[in-house]
Structures are given as structure tokens and as C-alpha cells.
Amino acid sequence: MIGFIKVKTKEKLLNNTLKLFMVSLTSFLIKSALIISMLFLTHFSLVSDILQSLLLIYNRLIVYFIYSLIIVSLWFFTLLFISGIKMGEKAIYFMQSKGSNAKFKYLFIFLRPSQSFRALQLFLKITILKVFWALFAFAPPAFCLSITLSLYFKEEAYAAVIYTLIIGTVFLTSISCFFYNCCKARYLFAEYYLCTDFEISVKEALRKSIDTSQGFIREGVLLRASLFPWILICLLLIPVFYVIPYTKLTNAKFVTFSSGLKENLLNIRVSSLLLQNEE
Image (cartoon, helix red, strand yellow):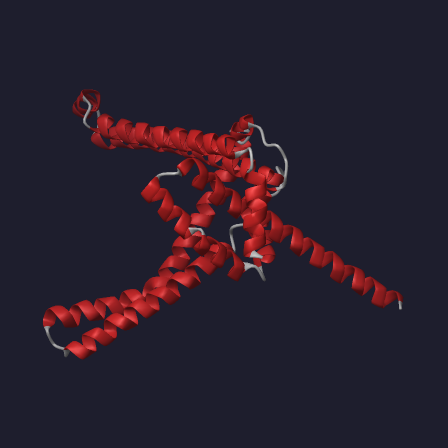
């Protein structure tokens, strides 16, 4: 399955590498520029003379409250814009993975307030879920590592015990990484459903993603692991114009292929049940 998806990805990538790279580059530049601008704005507004003069004239609590309200509002609208751009990039890759000729202007199709708010909701919920699973998955190796460091610095254990704890920490970390990636794979399909259906709710997209991912989680983890060497090549040789579109389109192709396979299996099961009832 993984090899088939990669072959199909290369077919879809043919003659579209530059376009997809420009989509990803534009998305990255816009998001980076917005985040950097907001960081500078937040920093300089804190040390500005205007803020200091307002603090001398008016009540400090009121000034800080209004200032915080303005900054939070600006960050909220910035995140809305970034979420819309990110979802537009996802939509282009998903359309390309299905064989459609996605146009560059689709990068901005989710910038309408209602759609960008849905995208922001989805990304926030997925982030919260990932943080929860990360805390749950990496708690055992973190606990083992803390015991190892405590015994090492206190010099209260033999070297063999320390080495055993180190090996145990590495072993638990590897298991935790696999478990965490399996948990992340459950939400991979949600962005696809939100891209293709402008009416679906975020909760429904997550539910359908969890249902669709059943049976494909292992393949999803292995597929992403197989792309890791490409990322290393990208860092060492800098062929980003090919690696970035290839990795993102591979993930999108995995989603579309798995969703289609899931629907076909469901149709086969429904048809077999109907035939059994007729008999």
C-alpha cells in the first residue's frame, strides 16, 4: 500500500512540482510574516512611550486590560488568517492528489470569516488533542529519565543500574513515539473532510476522521516514517522545491486513497448484506 501510494504521488507530482512548491512557499512566507509582525508589534507596544504615558495618566489595571484586549484580538485575527491560508494549502494538495487541477487562487479560498474560523477551531482542537496524547504517551519515559538523572547525580546507584535505566528510557521513548504517532494519525483525515465539505462541523470532521482511520493507522505511521529520509535529504542538500511538495502530496494521497478504499469496503459490505437479506 505504501509503495503504491508513493508511485501514484509521483504520477500526480509530474509537471506540478513547481506549482505546488510555490503554493507551499507562499503559504510559509505569509504565515511567517504575520507571526513575526505580531511578535514585533507585541514587543514594541510594551516598551512604547505611548503605553508608558497612558500608565502615568490613567489607572494601570484599565490600561493593561485594554492593551491586552487589543493584542489578544489582533492575535486572534492573525491566527484566523493563518488558519485560512493553511487550510487553503491543504485543499490544493488534496485536490491535486485526487487528480484535479487545483489553481493557485484556491490558497485563499478559506479566508472568508466563517471558513477560517472553522479551520482555526479544527487546528486548535487537534493541537489540544495532540498535547494530551503527548503528555500521556511520554509520561513513562519522562518518569524513567527523571529517576535515572536523580540516581546519577546523587551517585546512589551502581553503573549497571544506571545503564539499565538508560536502556529502559530509550526503549520506552521508542514505544511512546510509535504510540503518539498512531494517535496523531487518527486526526489526519479531519482536514480533508473540512476541505471538501464547507458545511460539515469540526466535531463531525473529527469523528469521521477517527472512524475512517481505523484500519489504516499503522500504514499512516509507516508512511510518515518512510518520508523521514527525504526530510533529512532536504536539510542536507536543500532540494526543497521537490521534497516539500512530494512529502505533502504523499500525505494527501494517503488520505484520499484510504478514504476511497474505506468507502469501497463499506459499499461491498452493504451490498453483501442486501444480497443476504434478499436470499
